Image (cartoon, rainbow, N blue to C red; front, side, top):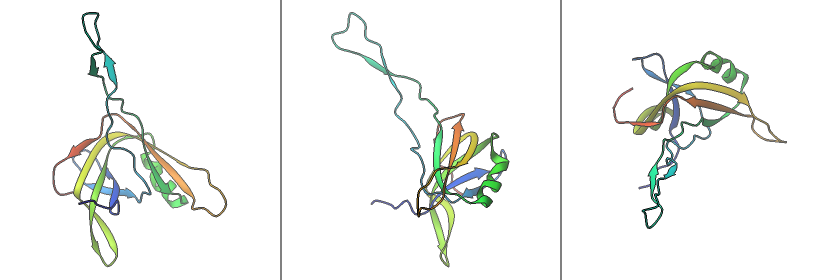
Length: 146
């Protein structure tokens, strides 16, 4: 069964061993994994090319958000500071309010956050971009709870 992206959240860990809280509402999220580069390991004794997996590159992860001055202010404390981040799939809903549960999966990483308002055109929603320069790969978290 396919699932909607409704109920997808960018989370931040308060401190090492702390609890997860929603960082902000997001419009889109990045790929949470990547194919490692293939390295040519062919020798002159081989009858065809031989490849091995290389090291994945922990590129930046970019999230699109709706820009507000309040959001920019709230993110200021995270700028250029190593933190633990997570993308949670799944929520509970009560009176039209979604609360993150991660019941459909969680992916964790660490890195430094950067934020800026992005360009726009006539009659568009103001957007911003959160980029996390990761210090480790996204890893699926199989634990339950917050």
